[in-house]
Length: 145
Image (cartoon, rainbow, N blue to C red; front, side, top):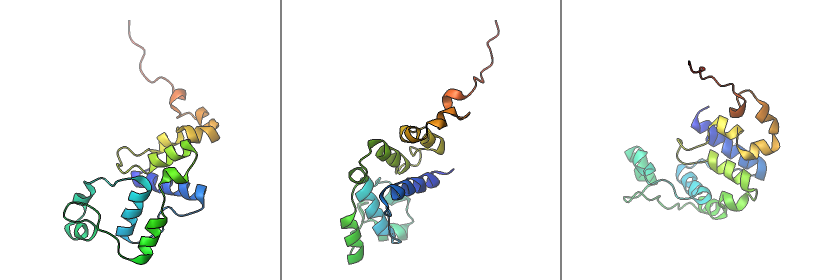
């Protein structure tokens, strides 16, 4: 699985738990504002990763998000709440945040997700799976004497 799949998994888990879409938009600027409102400050380096025209539409000259001006977008942004305020189960909140980490290198992998304490709490059988870290045979060769 790719890190974008894990991001999607985080959104799906949030939506299954709350019954509401986490990001109900098709507008890039609104989407970024919603991400910032629900997860925290966007990484400043994201402004430099956009193509120049797209960057000008989304970010100002000091790499801050441009304000939304559409009343519908503003209303959705105003209603958005941080994930930590919406999800009261601390383990579930930690799982979702791990899947929605802005840095894809730090985002949970599929394997890490299946070993997360929240998943193991409701699916303890995962510990019996042959690929669970504690169940893998020692593949190191026996040292020669």
